[in-house]
Image 1 (cartoon, rainbow, N blue to C red):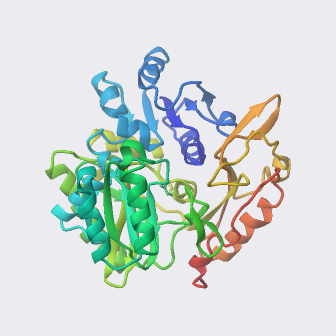
Image 2 (cartoon, protein in one colour; image 1 turned 135 degrees about the vertical axis):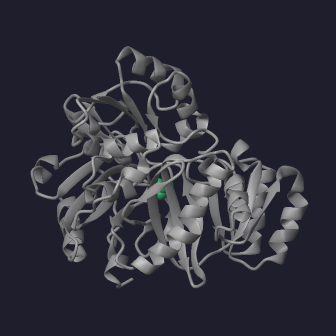
Image 3 (spheres, protein in one colour; image 1 turned 60 degrees about the vertical axis):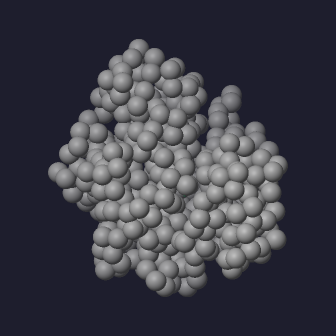
Length: 428
Ligand code: GLY
């Protein structure tokens, strides 16, 4: 098969890396990709949101399967557009992708289907005064979420009612979030351990991938601003079989079956952002695609042929798949540009790749890089994910392998958290 992967981050690098191992695949393309992906796939200069050009490329180049990494094209309806041209594509339809594309839809869906989540109310622009009244009624901290995609900045945890009222003003008066902020969700702040569970579904059934934990804040100790993800590890030792069983019963099954019942069957990778609260597991958010950087630590754990898994999702044959998990742990530490997640400079030469090649169990997944005249330059806020794979019983050693090697890679303004995976050691 010829396969096209859409996207340009660390998640897509990991997807391409895993797809190269498929016995079904002869050639891989990636649009638009990055300098790391270029080592494994043919880069195609088409933006990930340019659906007509992507369709044309797929037809012209006899691509058998397209795999979509990021959420935006899915929410824009790329799967519907491909399927109407009878082209094979892995991912959810536009309607199913609403689980990520509209926080109001997701929260109301969870209410209708008795799926545990934080208590909430949603408000439209015209209901500004009701929203203010609600903020004054509920205790702080208060979480305010823009309904639509807001470049990772749509969720604010407001420590006080004053901050919550300021955010309301940003959304409804200043319209700083544009269309994404025309509707909002105001919800209770949840306390507990966060974790990410990704499942692959065919719309009727699903398989669960190994659980991972992301580190969303920019500073050690989960402090500072929210980011796209500063690092991840998998599996998560604190999740036992009993809790996983509860998550399947109370969250995953009702979601997959609920979407089918509502006429929006979810095919593709469904990401459950969960909080293990004192009253049980609750959904923080859904994403309609693989997580980043969770993918970088989940895929090295899976024995299965990823393309077989994706084909089973597309063909409605997931019940035939059994996920085979390797007895290993994986840790990904993300190197970022100075200033991230606010503004940052790009174009800095990256040094030290030669010191980290051919190290068993070490993978450098590129997130924001590009090659210019044989030099690899930074090209994003998140630049690289240094990923170590080691013994399942020795997460500490796997963490140390990632950190020992990250030191070899340098660029002006390089930054990383120094506590990725620590919670998995039970010493947070
Ligand atoms: N790691 C968070 C996300 O993929 O959205």
